[in-house]
Amino acid sequence: MISVEMNPNIIRNIRKVEPYVPGEQPQNRVVKLNTNENPYPPAPGVERVLAEMDTDRFRLYPDPSAAKLVSALAEHHHVGEDQVFVGVGSDDVLAMCFLTFFNSEKPVLFPDITYSFYKVWAELYRIPYECPKLDGDFRIVKEDYRRESGGVIFPNPNAPTAIYEELDFVEDILAHHPDEVVIVDEAYIDFAGRSALELLGRYNNLIVVRTFSKARSMAGMRIGYAVSNPSLIRYLNDVKYSFNSYTMSQVSIACGAEAVRDQAYFQKTIQKIVETREWAKEELQKLGFEFPDSRANFIFARHPRYDAGELFEALKKQDIYVRHWDSERIRQYLRITIGTREEMEQLFAALRTYFKNRT
Image 1 (cartoon, rainbow, N blue to C red):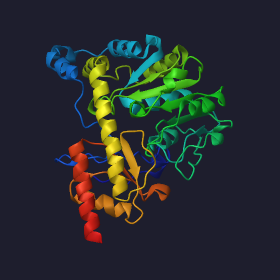
Image 2: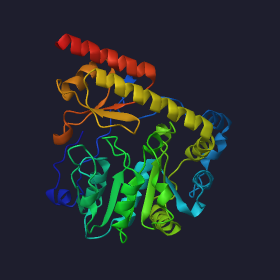
Image 3: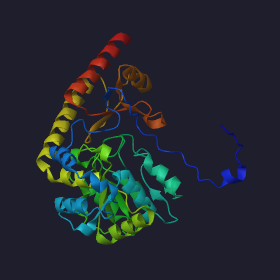
Image 4: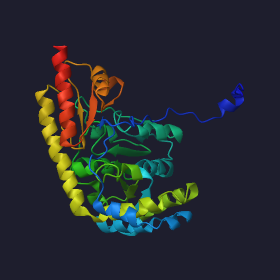
């Protein structure tokens, strides 16, 4: 191997960012409660589509407009096809939104505790940003967003706190930013409540972003989308086609469209997760955990007597994976994905054993 000392003049012109750190993806069989995936399989029709797929078509480029998927999503949400933009996971969609809409010299606003990719994209694209602090209960303070900005983005429910805000809260932020784009990241909305999609007819500055990775059990397919007014969607597509025309595979387009059509299975799966979540809240409270009221498919919890980092490592030794960040305000919290009832029972059994051995 040849080792050459790097020219400092070259290094000076390299774009440097602190990357997003994804949750661990262990390859062995574990109780995996660390990346908010759905514990149930996708809609049955997805398997049928895969089995019937003509692999000879793989030698051809996919449809750059992903028309089949766009049409299914437009029909599902009762909007025009020109109001839907699709991408390779919601991360791709959000990155395109940052690149397309956040070009002011004024700072983009997003919470200090939220999806950490927002800061990565802002720094990658050299977008100024500010992060108003969540309050002591981890809630977004809407009054902190009543000021000039280059745009606003926040998840609802927020991550990793799992707190959902009602539509009047979202509308307040939209009303105070008539001249900037406001993006509501609804990765977890299906477990929560009413969607900001209801506000599209009243606010032309609103973009709602969704994903197939959570409620639709298709994280491995990488499907995300945005819904907005035709003008903003057209700008997004212009950037996409200037960046990479063929972003979605033929497999993702076909399977995604089929998943959207099976609403009965979708609702059944959501209900199972919500029921398990509510039961898990009760079990965590019995064990002494404290947490904001979760409206997502995960719970953001701390225990007043035990260090979260030590709990994280102890569970990992038992092949139970949850998420932990060594960040100042949330260092004592664990984010626990809602798995199957059996997986959650394994988690609680491990926690009881750990607490018993520590007393």
